[in-house]
Image (cartoon, rainbow, N blue to C red; front, side, top):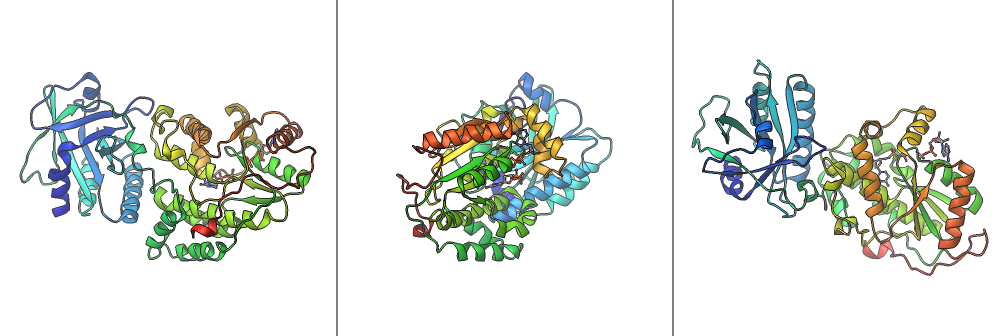
Length: 436
Ligand SMILES: Nc1ncnc2c1ncn2[C@@H]1O[C@H](COP(=O)(O)OP(=O)(O)O)[C@@H](O)[C@H]1O
Ligand SMILES: Nc1ccn([C@H]2C[C@H](O)[C@@H](COP(=O)(O)OP(=O)(O)O)O2)c(=O)n1
């Protein structure tokens, strides 16, 4: 109760609330005031006369517990309230202040039953969940802490006040160390915090510890191939392996395959930490293998960051962190490749290839197929990542033509005189073991 009260009175006054009312538009922003304020037209749409309105926020000091509670509530709301309720992602934040976001949901219940109230009653029993209700009164709307028995102690009304759009979309404020990790230690700590609830974390950490002893000196070139699913990465990387006599590696590495499904079902914080650690294991493999032969890598940090950012950022491409943002910077302690190529094909061609392959798609890929916005955000993020940035390759021609185009690019970029790749590097990538 103490925490709930603190959240209510200590934080609310300086906070802005954002509701992702229409994913193709700006979120609706509002703040709270003790004086009645006339609603704008846009806000009237959200706080319209129809139905009962609630918001709920998850706030808790333990980040893994908070992430899991949020994911659990999201699942429950989508399963139980899908028919008569609109459920929107909502957040409460201090404008442009990093890590200030408290995530939650906004619920518009148009049913004649008490379905949402019954569910909120159960959810509210958790000390980390805080529920508000909203009431219309003419041109005004106010918010108060919700109580299922309608006996709100200290029933102070806070009036909804339309607020200006924030410079940085709220979903970008908490990305660092929640969705994307910029050094190994941060991702490692997330899995350390989960060892009780996810026993597999221990095994993953052990694999990380075992791999990181390897160092990398000057070696053969390291070339990463990136792109959305079905853009032709497997086809191209296999062909490059043959033609360059190279070693082919992947991130996440094969040794993490038995754990992938488990971590894919976890909320972003844990799932993304798992993929981040996968890159460090692959980096150790690259270090070893590049002493012997050129190395081709199928997905690496660009994928980890691009999928994580595109999932974390709600709505439109415009909501992504601005180009040049520090969120697009390569982790300081992760081995850098010499070249990163991004395969791109038109959405139509990609769908044709996905269907042709006839494989089961991961949930994320199925979502991607339906969700044009998400696909655009992944691709745009790939392109914004810096140091190393990726070179875009049109992967729509035939496999043979794509291979030739890429061989040509590699030769040019790496200043090679002929097709053989034995060469020494100019750049010295950083060595993961020195930062361990
Ligand atoms: N250049 C290409 N032209 C036409 N089809 C392609 C080409 N490259 C790959 N494909 C086909 O598209 C599908 C996806 O390719 P794949 O290499 O598995 O992509 P990814 O590894 O990026 O998911 C496969 O069925 C593959 O045979
Ligand atoms: N290096 C990597 C590789 C994949 N990921 C994540 C990003 C997405 O959630 C999925 C995409 O993987 P998926 O299995 O669809 O990829 P493939 O095309 O099968 O190689 O994995 C990552 O975070 N980091």
